[in-house]
Amino acid sequence: MAKNIPIVENILNANDHLAQENRARIESAGVFSINIMASPGAGKTSLIEQTLPRLKDKLRIATVDGDIATSIDSDRAAAAGALASVQINTGGDCHLDAVMLRGALDQLTLSQYDLLIVENVGNLVCPASFKLGTHKSVLIASIPEGDDKPYKYPGMYRGVDVLIINKIDLLPYVNFRMDYFERGVEALNPGITTFPLSCRTGEGMDAWVDWLIQNVQPT
Amino acid sequence: MAKNIPIVENILNANDHLAQENRARIESAGVFSINIMASPGAGKTSLIEQTLPRLKDKLRIATVDGDIATSIDSDRAAAAGALASVQINTGGDCHLDAVMLRGALDQLTLSQYDLLIVENVGNLVCPASFKLGTHKSVLIASIPEGDDKPYKYPGMYRGVDVLIINKIDLLPYVNFRMDYFERGVEALNPGITTFPLSCRTGEGMDAWVDWLIQNVQPT
Image (cartoon, rainbow over all chains, first blue to last red; front, top):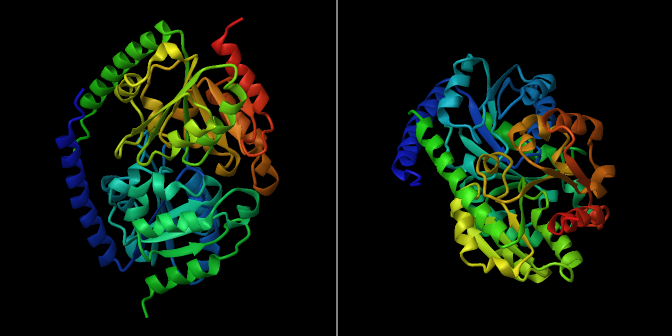
């Protein structure tokens, strides 16, 4: 029952190559792009729903939403103000990969947008291994998930550029030691840009939205 | 970049065969076994922590705890009253499989226990594809994850025997339409045994514990 590691490595190499092609394509269109990753239910779609109305008068935004099944997420993104919203149903695959994103890019006229938001499949393990070609990787942690997640899912916490700590409005109702969580994050990803916020109440959203604007239109 | 589906199928067939061997081994020792699956942070370890003290004077319990990294979970299980606790670090793999469980069983004298609780890796996708050989599969949903999870992760919701709905104490603080959630569950897994509970407050734990006792000692 060998798991055939060499073939997995070949897939990852091929994926990296396609990710580079995606990046070149996105850059040549003048688009800034992010890849949002998180556990199921940490708030990827909610973050997009809260972000888009705050930006839609300033930026032209497209989303790509990955899920095992349904078009719930792209429907929500479109309703929130995305000019275009492509749903990828992975049909069982537990992550997006570069070839899936390429297929989605084929359906967009990239030069019509300033910002491309890719929402990965809800999973704290597998998406970390598959580069898509986006500029920045954003991980959403969620307060009710618990404070031990950096320790248990180091691959994901190590590999991202931005950390959002969502559902801070639930802090009074759960046991979450912020100092323990932050020590775990700092050990894996020192100095990572972090935005504590609540998609439900809107608290903390401004700093996150400002970060996006600065990256789309560098000063 | 073919993903070589035939090889994946061979792995799954081999896994099913090993799962049958695990089951035979567990049954011949007179042990009842469950495989607990859930997203990261839905409450797998908390459920074990709350279950063990309620059972440890009645049943002899062993746990097997799967994680990408750390022994946090098996340490917590041992502290809660497991007579034996085996940690499997998958080293990156996003699920347990039958060969991993076999390795853990090798470290236990199974006939010394009545109940074997296997805690899978936190993931709502991949563990659904890998049988371990346990008697029952238990899925933990979590209120703050949101009410759309059955729709988005149908493979997991379809394949399990028992559904625990955890963190019901957070219902007043989040947007969770129980009827929408339950319709999704019912469409995928009609009549599934369901236990709404809170590992934090203890509400609803008795019904779940009674179910375990009844399965260990069938009347």
